[in-house]
Length: 261
Image 1 (cartoon, one colour):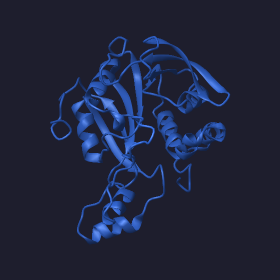
Image 2 (cartoon, rainbow, N blue to C red):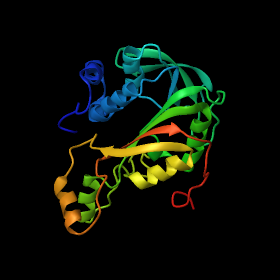
Image 3 (cartoon, rainbow, N blue to C red):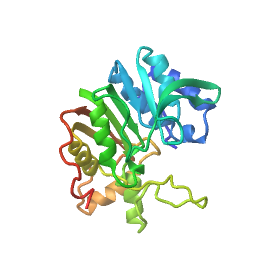
Image 4 (cartoon, one colour):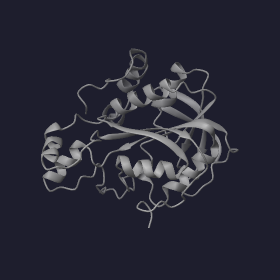
């Protein structure tokens, strides 16, 4: 857990999200810095109209209800046994919202709304879980986002300072690739770097601004220094990649080489 959970987060956003983390599960507490920063970036975007969150743990819709009360938030859920387009309760503890919920497999199902329906989309810690076809998801996101609409993506950085420290120690640099004793599927299938995520987003028709921040744990500067001494060009070493994107066109490359074979 990062020592300063609210770095680069305004007092206004902190006052809204901090009480949510206090009643949340261990997941919300571990991800507090990332979730707070995500809400901060969304508020800075000044979203209007409709926003689609791909998957939700409840923090973003609850926070945006207070911070952007005129914004309509729609979420997706992976339970395809439920109605494709209906309503579900989402939230934390006793704080719940009834939200329009689209239940789809993001790698194979069409999102059942018209082209250009949403003004903005949040894809927070989702793309790394895609098992077979991330561009299918992003092509659907592109289709349902209006021209010039916004997309915010966050995903772990496999070449963070902690990843570099693992490499130096002879350990795989992955963030969350471990298998579960329970045999569940919820591990990362593809962990990105800034160049690979940039390539993916451009292929999907977006103009992205991509950077990294340490949003899970404090960085390890010593590992970065060792790489620099070895002559390695080390630029983006935060443990989370963030991408603010503008829809520039339709999908450009359905299967970008290097990410697909």
